Length: 555
Image (cartoon, rainbow, N blue to C red; front, side, top):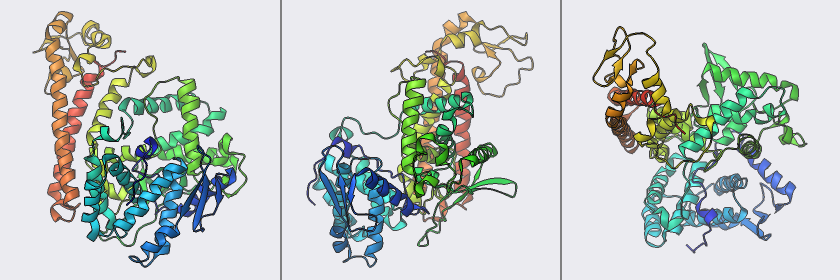
């Protein structure tokens, strides 16, 4: 394999793809992307069926070619249906066009082609040869780019027989020293950035009126945020949801996703395309559908005709809300609403595929069985969750940050480098008002180990008094016992970490031993372990967050 020159953009490309080959309308999406490139003049040669594509580089204004014959010939030695494999590669290349420069995509394409040749089209018999090449013949930057390129392809073309390669590449990638690759490698946005985005969405759509020109323009962003944080779906799945996808059955509300069910599924994990929704979300979707009827016929749930900036289109795709539409709309929401109207500062923007990651992590945090998570996420193999499982502690941190930001988000946006894990940050004016200066509403006071109980019945529902709503403390005792309170918060954090580690270990063993009966979805002992650990984690989290609620309102 020859050496490919790296750029920072190449190194920062995501190993998750926003599309999936098994989407119902994947070829329509790809044709839409290529048509847009041809319309703008960036694609000057070829179409979906062509053996070669030609693009004009946006930055260097040079011609960049993709020759699919170059990989078709060697693939013919190892697989019978070369045409189908080339179709997959074409679709994958096209899905990268809306996100990255054409030079970066060409590097990805070259990495994948060389990797497919080295591995004899991902044959497990050559896995050891691939491992030796990556570990001993590549430096960290080359190793990183190889892993990212192939992982992005495997996320797009998610097949059970490729999971050994996916697992090996993830392990190699995770062992790479990021500092040797680039200054900082982007994974997920920070908790602050996620919650800033969430707060803006919540506040904006509480204030904006339905007759405002921006209501229908940006409401798809609100719906995407609501749905895709519940259901682990790709952005292209959200865009492709059909207009008639909502239905009720047996007193439950459902949404049908544009997913194809795979037949060659050895583990018999059936992909779920009909998923139950909370009634409140279902009503919001139905209301949107009714309100956008006057804009005319739409193939997709999201009406592109209702979005002012998209009304100038005059082809087949004006009846569909496409991935390109969504990426453009999310960028405009950041510019016009977050940047200009709210004038917020943030470190990184939320990407279209981030919510799929959030939803997977949330399902794990809630103790769902790995098989059920696979079904909801459109996976036919448990090993496909391996990547998401490694970041579970991140979601618990977000929950804590969410509570701490709940009441002070719109008071100001001063940047702060203070650690959210520092208990000293918790003790502020709000705590003093609520727990020290505010008189008892019950008229009852009884001294306890630390502070005062104001519940006349002294009915204890928590193991320590300061987790209770009826707990108060005098100013003198507060100053005297402040260090003990700070220590308690840190102890709670340690307890959360221990429980989270237990939950992570349960998932890790289940993913590694997925063929064993002891970890099947029908094994009662394993399910009990998941439920018990999840319940303990919920208890400690709620206890800690309730306590922190009155201690984290400074800034």
